[in-house]
Figure 1 (cartoon, rainbow, N blue to C red):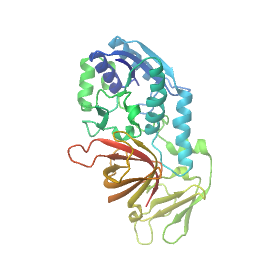
Figure 2 (cartoon, rainbow, N blue to C red):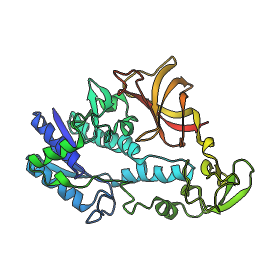
Figure 3 (spheres, rainbow, N blue to C red):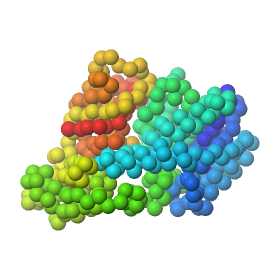
Figure 4 (tube, rainbow, N blue to C red):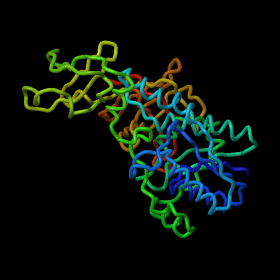
Length: 359
């Protein structure tokens, strides 16, 4: 097959490309320029799309003896990922930009261009497995990225390859070193790639501006503090609320609700965070056809953790989930990713939806 290897400049994508070459595919490497003003150097494990990353990807491709190109997707990335991220926070949601990047950039924009140029598949360094078109969790549970791939459709997955999902991360680094790849010990990227400072609140504040509102107690309705915008809060947040001390009962308060239209941030006891039902918009199906009957599943609401058995049903194009065990910290804008519920194949991703309501 003709395979386009997306090379970020990190160890995972370099080994993924190497394995694609070793498997006998006709491989071409591509680095995605996603920043309109890439920095010269990364800040440790923060940031991406720097000139250093592009150089690391180029050197890995040279070591593998494959052609290499840099493709500019900066404008598309800004529109589909960064702008979506800002708008979602402004609406009181808590989005995951990695999901949007996979959905809109890597496996749509990039894949469409690759297919137009005659490639058969996109290979990436994601930790997940594809077996006969079925998306599964990676062997390494600590690095598993099936959650952020759960927004992909079966058609998108048919054009994907995840060569390293069957191997734990330490072994990937060892393999990279054995192959002579200079990125073998390069730090993993953390936080949000387009916010290299790690200060999400400051980034959002500069984009959204000041939108004053009130922090309100859930039980009494009393105004406890003023704030500059709902983008500074997330469901489950405990610190940085701008209020004085705990509640009258001595218990800490948590953000339990965010209403962007009025600028109201509601705080209350931890018990208010327990969620037993979820609604999700824009459902996608990875490994099954669109369901016509209710079905059992395991739902995951965060990239790491937040799992519960659930009963799922599709009604009027919206996903409804009744949880067997309550979850906390469930926020609008997150993804609800569904997995097979049985023990033998519980690592199979069924589909997903974007959380629009929880109670």
